Amino acid sequence: MPHDITIVRPQVRLEEVRLRGQGLPTGVLKRIKRVLLALTNLELMAQTIYRYQVTRERSEFNRQLIAALLNEMSHFQDFQVKTYEYGWYPALARFGYWWVGWFFGVTSRLRGRRAMLKTNIWLEEKAVSHYTHFLKEDIWDADTRQVLEKELADEVGHVARWV
Image (cartoon, rainbow, N blue to C red; front, top):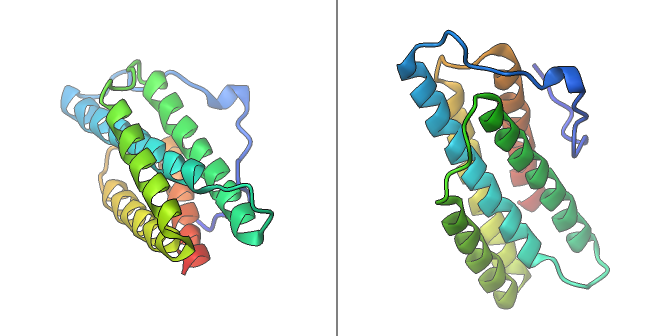
């Protein structure tokens, strides 16, 4: 299913928020939890990298960074909501991902635009790899799979943006 990656933050309606996971085997729930927590943490890292790369400069590059930041924030929210829908809470380890994001964001910014581009390409290629791997698992309901597919399309678009 093709996704419009020009939509930076898709609309979510109240009826799309559901309680999930009832009746699923424990093993499947553990796999879903592992993936949702991993994606929440990785999206936190991604948005933190972009947040600390943005400068005061009025440029197209900064505009693209801000758009990428907004998109990663929406991904983070999507997975945080999915985590809550299943009745779980984000892991405390997420703060470590924030620190890693801060480090990559600040150090790449200090090293200049080329370093920021290399960092962003690396980040988005890793995201594409993770999403592709996680989508191969046969554990997703249709709604969650659609979210994962949309996020994957966004990440592929981000790689193209920074190349």
